[in-house]
Amino acid sequence: MYIGRIDLKGFKSFGGVHQLPLEMGMVAIVGPNGSGKSNILDAIKWTLGEGAPSKLRISKQSDLLFQGSMSMPPAREAEVSILFRDGASSTIFTRRVQQDGTTLALVDGQRRTLLELEDAKRRIKMEGDRFAFIGQGEVSEVIQQRPMARRMLLESLLGIDFYRRRRNESSDR
Ligand code: ATP
Ligand code: MG
Image (cartoon, rainbow, N blue to C red; front, top):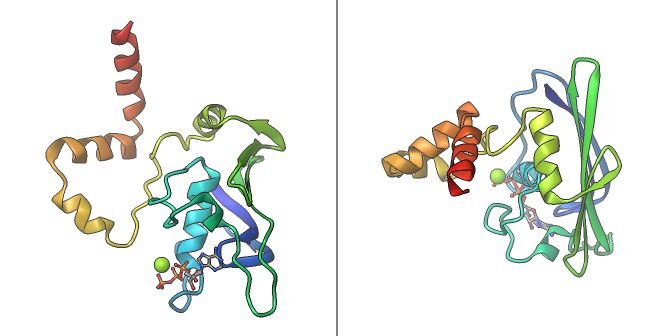
C-alpha cells in the first residue's frame, strides 16, 4: 500500500490547486526551509482524521487555510485528498475545512464521520497511529518517554494496540 497522489487546495502554504503525483518507493521529500515539506505531512495527518492543533502545528482550525499572499487571495476553504493504492484497489480520503472552522471528511466521495473514518482506515490497514508520524523534535521525546508510554507507542507501531482497546472495551461492560 502506498500513497499514489496528494491533491492540495488552499491548504496552509499551498494556495490554489496543487497535485502531487507520488510513486511507490518514495522515501523523502526535500526542499529549502519553509518550502512546505512539513505542511505536506500535516495534510496527510489531518486528512486521516487528526484534529489536535498541536499535532498540526496550528493554534486554530482556520490556520489550515492558506492565508493569502501578494499574488493570491486567502482561501475560503481548504481541501486535501489522498489516494491510497494497494495493488489494483484504491481509496481516496478527503477532508475539507471552511473559514468558520467546520470540517468534513469523505471516503471515496462519501461523507463520513471521524468515527467511520477509523473503520475506513482499518480497511486499508492505517488504523490508530500505526504508521508512525514522528515530527521534528519528537525523536528525543521518544527516548525520554516513560516505559508505559513507550510501550503504547510500540504497540501502536506493531498494530496490536487495537487488541488492548478491544480488551478494555469488553472489560468495561
Ligand atoms: P523546514 O525545512 O524548516 O522544516 P518545511 O519545508 O517543513 O521547512 P513547513 O513548515 O512545511 O516548511 O512550511 C512553513 C511555511 O508554511 C511557513 O513559511 C509558513 O508561513 C507557511 N504557512 C503555514 N501555514 C500557512 C497558511 N495558513 N497560509 C500560508 N502559509 C502558511
Ligand atoms: Mg519541516
